[in-house]
Image 1 (cartoon, rainbow, N blue to C red):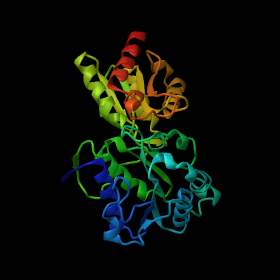
Image 2: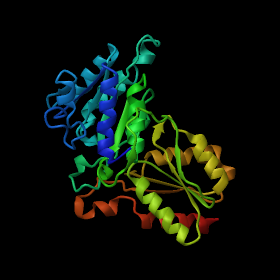
Image 3: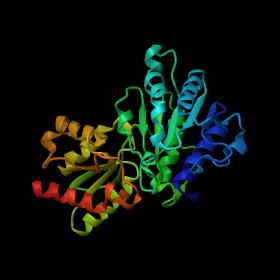
Length: 326
């Protein structure tokens, strides 16, 4: 079992599925000869050929339309948007066609496509290369929205996404692409979609997060433990459909919840989780739900971007507010 980074886990999952399923194709800007802007597809064109690892024009609209067409005709395309901030031209085909194909055809057709995109800030890039806009897709019926937070979850969830019969938005937190390694078996074992992962048990507060923020949230839980505060950490992983039962079960135990995400605060997906807690878990809460998020502005240039992103200090302060409130 090899120690690999998150970006290597993505490459490994793509290679495994391409080897075992000839209907899987990869397409996008520079994914072939160059192996992708972050090298997520490095070596795949040499191994599987230019007909299955396709370098496209610099045209996200065409990439998305081609992906829907391929999926509708029995292929399993995996399309890459070089950065999540470049995904906006793809929205027409994703929202109006990929997400609706099964419903529109009364189940006669489906769209087994994956739309991959490097996601989030923290790599000293301009704001258009640092978007965290997952919430735009959680409001579109017919889409799954997946955000892995570790090499193991990236490998297992990408396998599951490619095998899914319906379209999946697969957002990869690029800040942790090469930040650390963990042991991942290249055995083709998929992880379940639509399931939250409880990464740490606790009794005083529930910390709910996803993507790159899992790292800071776990570090905050360690800092809180040193102060005698027991935090349960949940990695949502699949935002839609949401495994709310796991979150509710945790809040029923702890009585408090802090939601952490890097997208802007207003209408971020954390607001949906908070609303559902108010609807379905109000009498389990001992304090108001707290949110630690990005701000309602574009992510700043690199001198200030780490002040925009949720930090361990902000998470710890939010936990202490929930404890004080109760």
